[in-house]
Image (cartoon, rainbow, N blue to C red; front, side, top):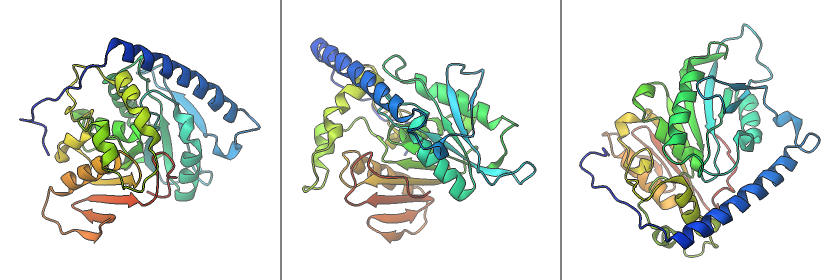
Length: 308
C-alpha cells in the first residue's frame, strides 16, 4: 500500500509528569540491563562458541561496532556465502548486537551463511529517524566491503522486534533498492497508529498479561517526537509501499503478542499486491512473495529464531 494521499496521524502528547516518570524508569532499566547483560557476556559465563569471528567498525559510523560471524567450515578460496544482516531488538532503547550472538552463531554455522550483526544508536539519545539513517549508512558500507566473503546476489536482512521494524524501514530507502533478495521480520512493531488498548484487545482472550503493555508508552516516548507522523512508512512499515520492499518477505507473529494483529494486517496488505493464489492455512500461508506465520501460544520475545 502506498503512503501517498494518507492523512498524517499524531499521538496525543504525554504530560510533562509522565515524560519525567518514563525518563526515570527508562534510565533505571537501561542501567540494570547493562549490568546484567555485562555479567552474562563475561568470559567464562558466556558460551565461547557463540562469540563472533570478528568485530568491525566502519568510518561512516565510527561509534558503532558490528559483529561478524563466518561459518567455521568456510576456508579461504571457497565460493562466496549468502549474507544475512541481523538487527537486534530492544524497544529501540536497549541492548546491543551481542544480544543475538547465540542466534547468529548457530544460524551461521548450521546454514553456512555469513552473518553480520548490526549495531545502531539507541533512543532516547538518538530518536527516530537517527537509527534508520545510521543503519542505512552501515548497510551500504557492509555491502561495499570487499573483505567479506559474500555473494551480493544473496543478501537477506531481518531482525526481531525493534530490529524487525528497522529492517523494514531501511529496506525502503532508495539507495538500497534491489540490494536485498528477502526480508525476515520476527514479531515487528509495525503500526504506531494503533492504540495500546486496541492492540491488547486484539489478543486471544485466554492470553496471559502482555509485559509489553506497561512499557509501550515509555518506548514510544523515547523513540519519536509528538509531532512525528505515525503513518510515516519508515516508522510504521504497515503503511509502506510493497514495491519498495524486497521480493520475498517472511513475517512471524507471536500469538499472545500485542503486536501480532498489526503484523498480520501488514502481511495481508503486502500479500494483496499481485494476482498470485494463496497457499497454506490460516496461521501459515504464502502469497505473492509474502509468507505469514503465527506461532501459537508464544509471547513477544520468547520465540526462539527457529528457521529462516
